[in-house]
Length: 266
Image (cartoon, rainbow, N blue to C red; front, side, top):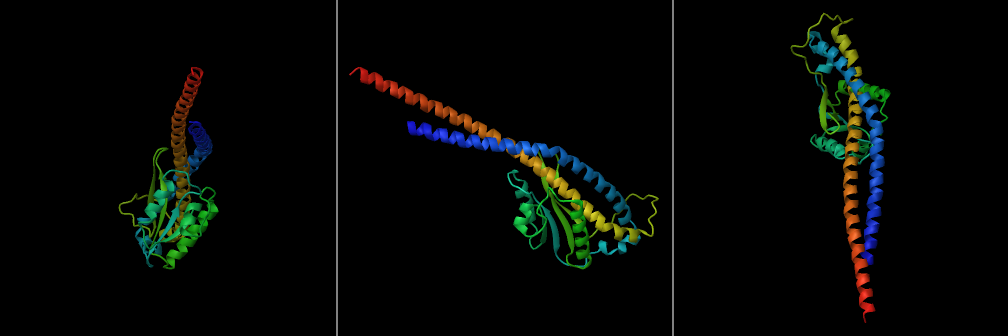
C-alpha cells in the first residue's frame, strides 16, 4: 500500500508541474492578445481602404490590359502562415491540413513551424515587419510578371472571436475584374492602368502584413484557450489523484490499526 501512495504522490507532483506550466503560458498569451488584436484591427482598416481603391481600378476597362489581370505562368504559389510555437490547440494543424489540399504548389513559409514544414522563409510571424511584407510583395509581384507561377494565394488563419479561428486561403493574383463595382468620380493620374500597376506591390504587401497579424492574433487566442482547457484538465486530474491518494492512505492506516489491534490481543 505504501508503494501505491508513493506513486500517487509522484503523479500528483508531475501533473501539478504541468498545471503551473499551462497557467504561465496562458498568462503570456493573455498579455499578448490585446496588442495582437489591436494591430489586427489597424491592418483590417488599412486593407479595407486599399481594397476600396483597388475595386475602382479593377472595374476600369483600361486596367483589364494590366499584366496583373492575366496569368502567364503555370502552377500555384502559396504564402503559408503558421505559428512560431506549438501548444496552440489545432492552430498549426489546421493550417497544414489546408495546405495539403494544394498538392504540387510551391510554398513561401512565414512562422517557425511553417519553415520547419516547408523550408526556408521568414522564421517569425510575431516579429514579421512592414519591411518584410514589402520584400515579399515586391518579390512575388516580380515572379508573377516573370511567369514563375499562375496564381498567388495567402494561407492564413482568420480571427473570428476568442473561441473560433479558421484557416482560409485568400487568392491575390491575378487580380479579378470588378463587375458592377462602385463608380466614383475619382480621377487617377497619370491613368488608371499606370496607377494600378504601381499600386499592386503595395497592395500585395498590405495583404501579406494583414494576414500575418490576423494569424498571430488567432495563434495567441488559440493558445490561451488551449492552455485554459489544459489547466482545467490538469486540475481535475489532480483532484482525482488526490482523492485516490487519500483513500489509499486511509486504507493503509486502517490496515496498520487492524494489525496492531490483532497483535495486542494475542
